[in-house]
Image 1 (cartoon, rainbow, N blue to C red):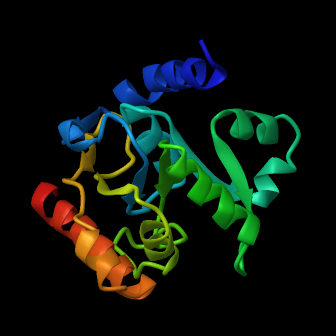
Image 2 (image 1 turned 90 degrees about the vertical axis):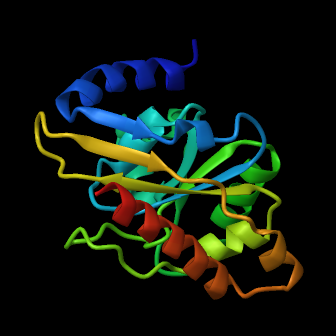
Amino acid sequence: MTFYDFAKSVVTGIFKPWYRIEAVGVENFPKEGGVLLCSNHINNYDPIVVGIMAPRPVHYMAKEEIFKVPVLGNIVRKCNAFPVKRGFGDREALRSGIKILKDGRVFGLFPEGTRSKTGELGKGLSGAGFFALRSEAVVLPCAVIGPYKSFRKLKVVYGKPIAMDVMRSTKASTEEVTELIMSEIAKLINEHQ
């Protein structure tokens, strides 16, 4: 058993009953190949919750400051996260994300770039479009719905993969692709709230 699997089982045992987490649409999650998993961001626990409910291991970018914290940095790294320098285009982080997708793994991304203070879906940054266009990965929309309150239901909804063929063949801009991804996340929120 890997450290990731061990950590996932421990955290699932705590989080799932505490927040009564329900996963919806798991059948939409591709069983193999690169997957760009794009979710809304309403709480600092979102990466954990989306990760434990996903049927495959998820890799994330995390702000580089976390990796400098003793012990925590090592745990985060072992849980498939890699550092990103925020505030400017971190080429190394972009390459790492593309490599994960090209290697047929799952890369989790929060297109808004930061947690929503209001819980409302914010504007997506062009990074989601960049990864979607630069890889052949399946783009899977995801929505975290509900309050993070003890013993109140929290949902993680996986939508159907977004057809990217036309966007890729017509050389759509990263902004256009990000808008499409965000509109699919918005639909999931509206349908499942």
